[in-house]
Image (cartoon, rainbow, N blue to C red):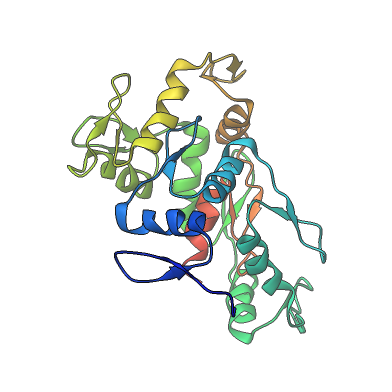
Length: 253
């Protein structure tokens, strides 16, 4: 810390020991981003930021939790996850034995047990507390899509999916896909989407014949037919077919 910092920034006066650090700092003022991702085109001001970003394409997860072994792309994600191990879950549900840290979380969870699931699906036997939830679930089996988009006519099985889709018609999404018409607000997301059209769709669903460029997308799609919901909310026990749906749901807790 006592080292002289002779390299001064002409914009803000901040000093640096090495000229290379000053050069890197100057990008804060100039907005220069010389490090570009070869996969999606997104640019970064520092090489270390590009290295972290590239893990989103490679799937590399070098940061491992010593408590449970779960791995993460970035150290900040590991630090956030590690907090879930702090403090004991000493509040036990008398119905199923599940443990919780806080009383409100246990109370929310116990509502699942108190309410009778009287509305049963005739196809798979799954029970629901409310008839409206059964009606929504039945569309998994019937393929019904009662919510049409007023702009392009595409239909959806749930209103929330329609609302999400309608954002693609927003005027602040200037990048339009020439193949399907979907719009994007940022170039990197647009480029990633375009690859889905150019890639060979060699993974075909045996139920409906729809094809996908990646096996993971086929696996996710097949849950439409099987009704499988592998992502369970630890707070209330509700399950979802996609992890992104669970992420949205957890915001209500």
